[in-house]
Image (cartoon, rainbow, N blue to C red):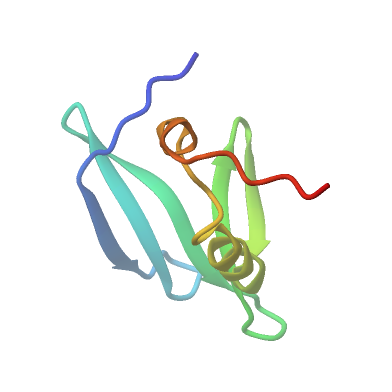
Length: 93
């Protein structure tokens, strides 16, 4: 099981050689800075993509898809405690 943390976050504008201009979200864990996500532009059409590290892979997700997922989550994603407090919905017979 992985440990859940909510470390300090920082936005960093970066221009790595040969990679254009990108925006990084970093987290400081145990005194070390780690990239959490990086936003990059596609070379063909300048569409924005979010890079997320998954094991040995950098998974690129269109920013429009990520926005949609975040919008869907608002008001729909709840903690287990929320469900314990809320009365069950009335069933329609």
